[in-house]
Image 1: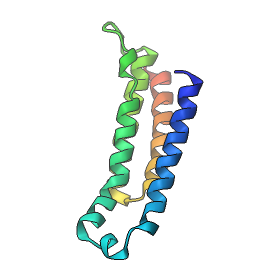
Image 2: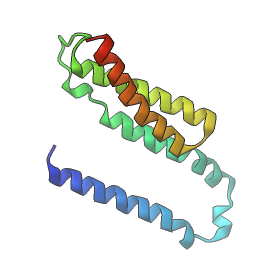
Image 3: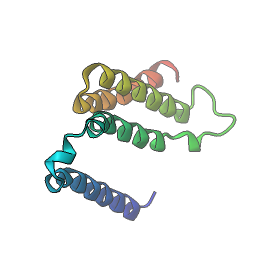
Length: 119
């Protein structure tokens, strides 16, 4: 992956975040109080986070003969474990920041476990 792609992706995410954070100030309050918008607001952060994680899974680099002890399989298992951890914690706490912290800790913890105990 080239550095120009990463820079572009970072600025694109920043722009989308800025627009979505500024948009409620421009929309009339009457529209913001609709029930469907409240339901969407509850599920949107988790949906976006799951989509981002699913698109970043590293299954593309796996070959057909990858063993359970390979680093690629360890990374994929750690990513899936972290995703499941994030889903469970978000379902329990409804706190996006806590879920992200758990996800970061989980992927690092799973990678450490798989590296030290499986390979």
